[in-house]
Image (cartoon, rainbow, N blue to C red; front, side, top):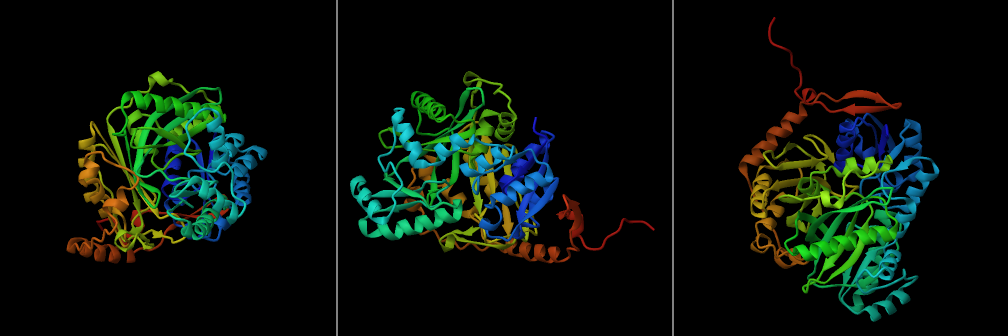
Amino acid sequence: MIKKILIANRGEIAVRIIRACQEMGIATVAVFSEADRQSLHVQMADEALCLGPPPAIESYLDMDKIIEAAHRTGAEAIHPGYGFLAENAAFAHRCEQEHIIFIGPNSRALRLVGDKVRSRLTMDKAGIPIIPGMKNIPQDFSEAEKEAQKIGYPLMIKASAGGGGKGMRIVWSKKELRSALEAGQREAKSAFGDDSIYLEKYIEQPRHVEFQVLADNYGQVIHLYERECSIQRRHQKIIEETPSQALDPELRAKMGETAKKAIEVAGYNNAGTVEFLLDKNKNFYFLEVNARLQVEHPVTELTCGLDLVHQQILIASGKKLSFRQQDIHPRGHALECRIYAEDPARNFLPSSGKILFLKEPQGPGIRHDCGIYSGCQVPIHYDPILAKLIVWAENRALAITRMVKALDDFVILGIKTSIDFLKEVISHPQFLAGETTTDFIPKYFANWNRQKKNEDQLRLALLASAFIELETGLTKKKAAGVSKQIFSPWLRLGKWRLGGK
């Protein structure tokens, strides 16, 4: 069994992995950029090492520094989380060469599914339906233009080296192609260190349905049923749920078996997600394999009763899956809202700065995966996700009611967030009816501009700001030869003493 894991990530996912390791009695190593020195994941880990300056290319994307940190701290394994190097086959291969366990798929499988073009070809040969599109990466604009004419507009530009909506663009006409390609390549390069893109046909008004899969190192593959991820902004998911309202038992079984076949064809191991687009006629098409833990994995955990990070670590440690497909019986309904540091009223402009006050929602069936705390700084350098709010209930109607109440109780002061926007989305009549397609946000919320003033919250912000100014500093703790700062609410009270003489 693995004894020490380095988490090559930041924010709420790093915190999530650290908590799982703590439950399993595994020591943890955090890595961080200079912008994240006081981040929650740094404070929670047993050891912490600074990788370098804030830009991801000089810190969280620097393979040499991360490998060196693992050797320096004696970490046997690296968990990449999601984003950054999570789907980088070269990094997984480096880990294999350095005799470090990569908690994810093997490098050969990762190279296959991580290359979206190559994986499409593999699935097509295996008889798995794919969206019409390119079967190679264009070498120049001229080649891309010719392929675009063959595919037909509208079409989608997608990054070959990763997902999460990074590098993705819809192109409606020939005149938009060049600028969209250039923008997509720049974003892909920044997010994944690889500017490779490809083109595929854009299917209008589909549903985005994905299947969570686990595969051990002994040939056993199971799926943990589906997640509906159709509520998206700029091709990035913001609300997820399970089960999907679009699937009946027959279609669910067919898609689940297709997902397992895709994983088997790829020779894949560990946790992964097979993504599909579902059109109006209930035809489904293979989209891609996300070769990592997904942001939305908690909704599956709540309905299936499994901890996916635990399972990842067990598989990476050489354990067999302890259950079979027939043992998985999802129960109830789960919803997740991603909480972003951005201003929905200003076209979702990222919002950075100090969080003056944080009040987490609580109650039965409520889970909050969080990477922030009152007084922490939200930097400008990374994806603006702050937290994930997840609820479970016996049925969808109750889950929605519970989510609305939880969002009402969720307070983050000091920066702009998407909380009010999310509450309006899940309260929309079409969402309540389960009529969710990938064009939901542009169709119903294109000009959302709610300027809400709440005097109580403004007063609370002033009090919180004054309270934090009393902060006397953070206790310093040495870890692995570097200074690690520990957060304690007691240190935010100013001077104090126990009563008595």
